[in-house]
Length: 374
Image (tube, rainbow, N blue to C red; front, side):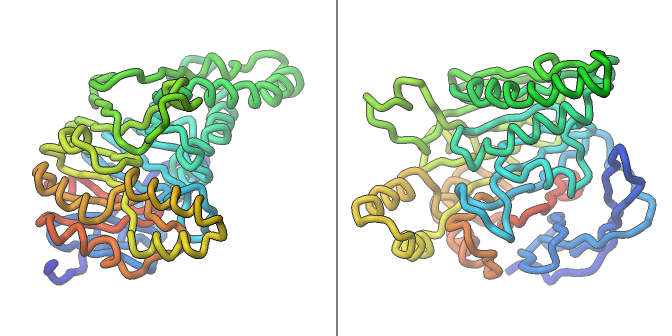
């Protein structure tokens, strides 16, 4: 049983280029964990809520590590309560974006982060619920940063992802190029930095560490979300789905992305302080598929994909316990249409095997790794 929540006060906030608005967190701390959300409903154990305030914010300690869930919906389904998958990892002054589902730019803005303030973007796989927000994000990052990039005040934003990410990236730049040309020729007289000079893209082709900026090291492992036939177009193109481990000054953090049970992912999570994992409810998925309005044959294919390519709460609990994980944060909630105010629908199966903290994520929820450790 979690300890009874007690009231405490914490000041937290973000600065934007346009607002002096600040936020004061009125928080509830339980079990030593610290997580905060701007929603006032469906608060999971160890989660707290923020309310706006004019209190002057204090900075997080240098190197402090935070996870902000921007979108926790599973699948490319529109929802009024959950956005499509995206998470922000903040390590000191560095900001790393993991996946970019539809609505990611708005969600970043809601938590006080402008798109050009992102340092690096990591796409786990190229299903559209994980990358559909990239064109808008890249466009807004260019628009807000076009003058500062020209003056060399901001480094390029780099995008990392499996094979196929370059195609998505090039398409976004090509679309943006029309507006950039018009802005540059009209309002700016030809002095703007063009989008191609403000962004970089790097395809990941194999397992292992692929990123080290002196603050975090990132390791990729191919997971079991995809199950292509050998002659399929995706197999020929080399499309893959990855899980990522971020080794930060605050400890290791693993983002599963979408995956089924996987020995590679199980090895990746060993010793992680936080496991940010996708989750499905088999019972709700069965009901969801039955009401989906598709043929029996297609329903069987979808059910098989859900079983092989995603993680149940019990799968997550066993993996986390075997890996010595400290905290599990659940996101990419499937089925996606409900708010799921009953957290036990997803957390109970994890807790059946896992003895650490379990949090059902909500959009804009923040998990403060530094506060958890102190």
